[in-house]
Amino acid sequence: MPDLIALTLTCLFVITGVATALSLLDSWLRGSNAYTVLKREQALLNAGFLPQVGAKEVRLRRPARRTLAAAKRGQNRRLHLPATSPVTQLAS
Image 1 (cartoon, rainbow, N blue to C red):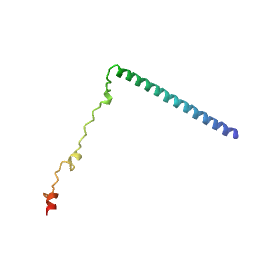
Image 2: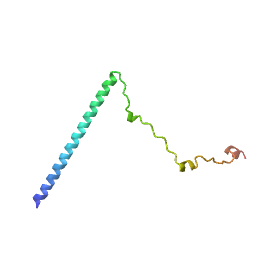
Image 3: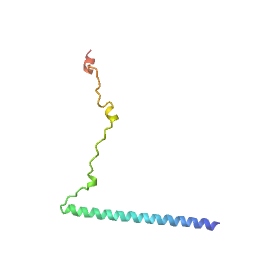
Image 4: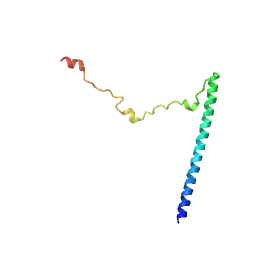
């Protein structure tokens, strides 16, 4: 029975170690690719080229859709305010 516990713990540590190693390798590859892209962009900037923004980054906002309920709300109604101002109220 104690051998089964030791085997289970060993397998758990091995699986955790492999997952950690794969995660570190993935992070290193992504970082390496990002660094390469940054160096290439810096070389282009130094050569005088200007970066062009991708089409998906220059997306226009969709216009807000006005529903019938929103149109009927109080935004289109006028408010009837009293004719007195705070200055005239202080003077009296």
